[in-house]
Length: 210
Image (cartoon, rainbow, N blue to C red):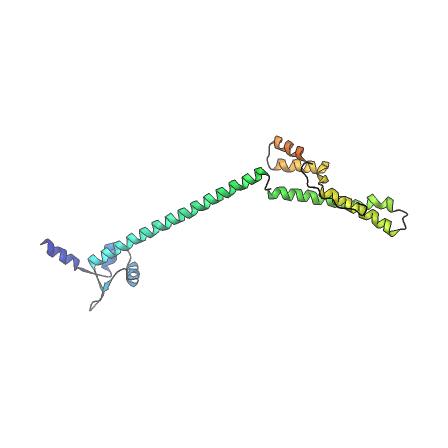
């Protein structure tokens, strides 16, 4: 008797309208699954039908595959995100180490120093006419006049290369204001102030008299 019932269940059919109600999806989803050959339809004389047991088994297998794919995708996304976080943390730690060793400088610090250097150089070059005008007064020798101006320009360039602009009161005030704007403690400000004038690269610009 049980064998007869099992055989009847295995050979039972259902329509395209009945199957969505049985597996709990819409009729459009059933049509898509049929078109993608997940479900197998049996052609009838009047209408298409589905083998009930086979269709339910196929649908369950399909659902299991979907769950496995989503799980694998989530794991891949997690690993990718985790790798990115670890890489970013390692890069950040490396940058902090380079900063502490003095092998790397903040962009803001470089921009501040360049701004101060160019401002000081502009003021220094604009002052050249007033510095040489008395020496040029009464000169009739063009070569001597040119030499005076040339020496003054080269002197300004040497002062720039030696970083003498850092000795000015204006630079010290600007640096103190800049460091304070970054929220650094007073001892760091004092330390930076004491380091002014130390370890400066010196590039001498030769004059015609050298």
